[in-house]
Image 1 (tube, rainbow, N blue to C red):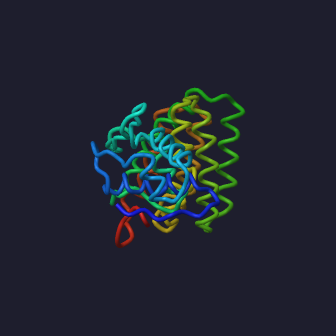
Image 2: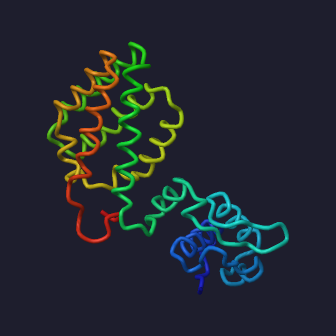
Length: 240
């Protein structure tokens, strides 16, 4: 693969980004060996320290395994990488080469949200229940402005997920919304059925306030799966 010499600003960032994309796109396949540090440094017209830093970051993402004093071998990102890979790509304006990425992230969002709503109803203290109720009313006041409702929706669900008391869910939620992944990248129009269902959001808040976990989960499922039934934009769904 031919690499492009990088500008002098953030050298290791450019080396990292090109190597990351080469691995994710399949230019280098699992089991392949990357060129050595010296060869990469020459190809990018950078020093070996920049290459070494880029390789370290690739290893942190689960894209390669760097052997001490040996070869750098490409790993299968579908086996070794986590959500931080998707976030890394989103921040650079790129996406995983998966046609159903938006759908997949929305499904994960629904899975987390449904159980988080149930747990929030069962575990949250009175202050958190009141916060969720107020957040829903602030959200409702923005209708029918879909872009502003989409932003307020993130705030609302952050209260719900924090109130559920599950740190793993909170970290997953943070990954889903950071860099607008799976929420901001989905056109609000595709989520119109969910976002404009103010009554449904109020029912969710009421179930949480009353401690009705099963009802909160059912209402969350109704809200969070609505976008999955909406038609995707033409072309690659993950670029919607």
